[in-house]
Image 1 (cartoon, rainbow, N blue to C red):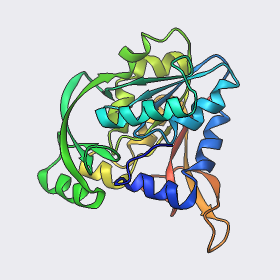
Image 2 (cartoon, rainbow, N blue to C red; image 1 turned 135 degrees about the vertical axis):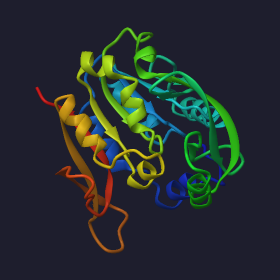
Image 3 (cartoon, rainbow, N blue to C red; image 1 turned 90 degrees about the vertical axis):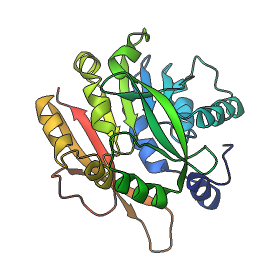
Length: 256
């Protein structure tokens, strides 16, 4: 992986040699042969690259969606470093929401790494999150909808990963047709602090799951030992707004 030294994502990978390896392995079990996997909010590619490598053995393809231009450059570099051509990893430089629009985005450091959509958030909230996440640069980026995106994909979709700093529910609202048609597995961050900042009800992922006939599980990481980077994962039926310690995100699995 080629990454900007100024991003906190880079530090984690550089010092541990890992980046959510256990979650990536869990998600790989839901990849179906000859399907598309979407990484929405792909950033530098810490999910997109290993998922594309794993998907290749199943004749599946990853589509990485990332609105920050400099992040897309790093994604392309990392695809080249791992010998992933566009038949295995396609990179699209825009974001997703409930409707097409242009928004303001705050980006880490000199324009690469962590980022979040600032539009629609109170200035005090975005200032707080910008200070915590070192988000100093402002970009204008374009958003589309998931339904519009997958009109361009000839193959069915089996898995979506969403990490959009509290924008996950907006992404799902823009993909109602795709989700109904494909009954895909969804893993999203659904960070409670970001939901509060965006005035998204904390129980909204559970409401969505019930309305769309899905099961919702909190994915919790537990260290195997006090001084170890290795973790094991637990799938706990979600009961938001109560969130177990160590929660990494929510896994939404369609009922058969």
